[in-house]
Image (cartoon, rainbow, N blue to C red):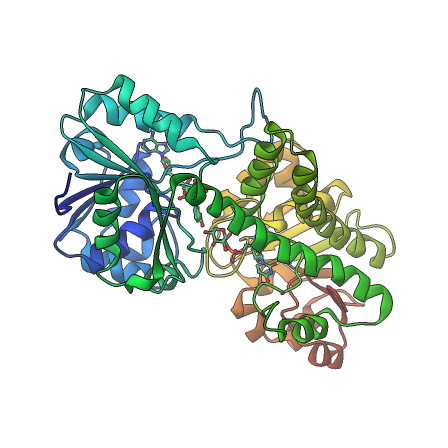
Length: 461
Ligand code: NAD
Ligand code: UDX
């Protein structure tokens, strides 16, 4: 196969499929792109005439969708038609941690991937390039090829691995200016066809090609290394608190060593997001499946450290509030796993809140982008308490000042910029005294807060 790609289908209209295809459509107006999903309400939201109501909030995304949608970018639930017409099919479906059976709590659940492969095989009557965009365990391409070749209609399938490195909150900029685009594959023509798409806006030297397995494994490895940096600095944050060192100062001092580098050294209440934990668990599971227990133990520690950081932050709140938070009102600023996204998957806020609720704290939660029902759904999903109890102990507000009225303490759990702009003098007036701020993101200025009269705690100081 050596033809120019005219039609693309992307299965999965989530945080990756939606933004990625929007940017490809914007940069390649000659290619028709249809993003399909079995979730009807998600597709309806992508088609909402008001682009401020898209299902995913990402800075800059609404403008791109407004530009390309209806021109060469389409969102649809007609999966079969889109597969049938496409020259190239991206699989961007979710690959969550398995919550049943063998590998429960560790392995990636590949049932959605397999469903896609079976559907493609059933429908395709012309040759297709199938691109793994989802993050997958190393050697998944072999399973995909097996399904496609054994259940298909005798057409040729070329499988490529093209993992996505975007981070939420900066997805559009990451897609427009990627550090690199990685393409793994065996068929030179298929690789060239995919590279040609990216070459519309990415310079050739940033498009690297590898074999399939290196590409699949590189994605898991990149996330493991990034998460490891956060756990490494978080481990040092605890030592800083005991010794009088300041973790920001340590991070700056080590980050200026060009071999270490300055990014991803921000101590925090713990990393969240849909990727880091899931991908490390998967890496650990794969290592164990090859009997590489030292390798598995090594990476598992990154997650153990992250769990410890969330717990010790919540513990510190309880200890400081005179060893009991029962019946005390604690305002939580932020619920998303990082700023500039409405995504809450694995957010540290969920676990800190759960821990405080176990101690019968009363929480009032404010997040600028996360809807009320999502916050309750996140808590209910843990099954620690009944939904009724969660609603009794947790109030969600849309006014940040409402959250702090008569509160004993504020916990800053997401680094939203707007928190820095609040009238903290007024906030202190509204709170019970002494007024405590527990800054899990090192967002506020200690000097200013202490000047106002807050009791201020920040991670790693
Ligand atoms: P998501 O849950 O937001 O979106 C996945 C979508 O796929 C859902 O809307 C779901 O309905 C749909 N889907 C599942 N099976 C389907 C099927 N058989 N047919 C049609 N639609 C189907 O997930 P996401 O965050 O976009 O992640 C997708 C993949 O990309 C994962 O493997 C993830 O690890 C990887 N990834 C995510 C990020 C990120 O920042 N979120 C970054 C890089 C890579
Ligand atoms: C991550 C990877 O960065 C991205 O390349 C991959 O494609 C998907 O997974 P994402 O999870 O969207 O992206 O956000 P990221 O910026 O990596 O942040 C992950 C978590 O780590 C957040 O909770 C963030 O607050 C936390 N973090 C990040 C820190 O606590 N400190 C840091 O220095 C950096």
